[in-house]
Length: 476
Image (tube, rainbow, N blue to C red; front, top):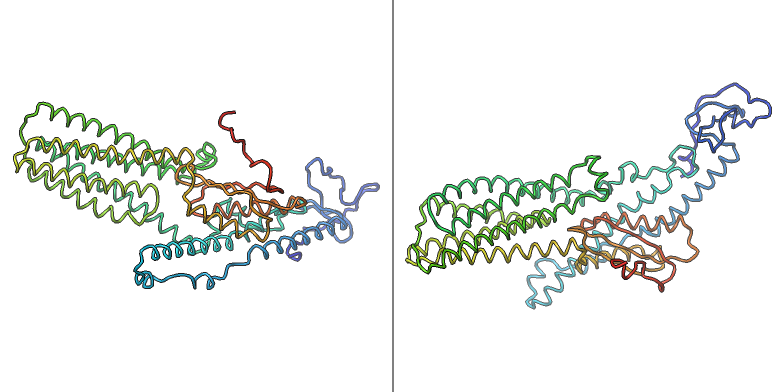
């Protein structure tokens, strides 16, 4: 390690130092001025260079200090990066065939959860093994303060982009997920435009209130998709102006977009419900016939939305899951619109169509009201799901060889993403450089998990005492 940390020297100068001057200052400003010094050649004469030069005694002391720090860092890495034996974990895994052979549903569910837990542990271990080494190597890149970075950790080179340090299989999995999410959003935009045009043509050919409600639903579908598409682009943009305005990222724009759309959906279908009630109030009317173009539009919506719905189900992002929910709602809504409208005409029941539209409006209000409430609670700091908390607890356990314990692990939503707080216990006489290296490595490893947007690590030396936050902070 010391060999590659050797100081660089540039050309030589034959100009001797003036009498009474220190050879390493040679007419240059002192350390406090911030100016560079001239380097010394082998004869003790000064030669100009890019980095500050120091006397041989200083350089030896710096090299010894750097070597000692490297040794301590290597010991910390060796202690931390003792990987879990994959074979030891995999032997507790049940294959798909073994799971199918288990008749007891509770027992099968137990082993399914155990398989998922093993997957979580292996994912955490892979991230720690991939990230921790680079993070530790990035600490104090210029230990002798000579302007030359002796250590070359990748965090600085990558400008803090932890994604590039992840294992290749993890990066490939996330990249595929992002591509599938973009594909789902783009397909939804095109499908909603085509279906909306078809619904407009069909709505002008009949007076069916169920079809009008379906038209409103399709118009709002397009609006929802455009909101999702726009927020997706805003989150992905890497503009300096946006990064200054949103220093911790813009991922909360996604649930905010869904929240806005949920409110628009609820208000719109309250209007449909009101119109349905007004049409039923006279207690008399005429059943409207659904023309072929209307039936075709409804059937096409059911088919297209059904395909997109099943295509979106495996893509576990909030935006795509919102689109999947919207497609599911469309399949149910348009199926019932077709049933209510057609049955009302062919059975001669005039009130079936407006009553069906009212029931569908109530269903939409309830469905999107639940989505609205879910996003509000997440934006308000709802606790993370228990399985994710267990995953973060395992990450804390991975650091058990280098800490005394953990005082608390708190995880909560800040939108769709998770913010997590670790309070670690160290010995009271732990050096600052060691506590810093442990805490920041844990922070980066936590932020390497896909569900975690931000992590905070605090240190303590006693398990008793204050919890770290004022209990009445919201009221003070």
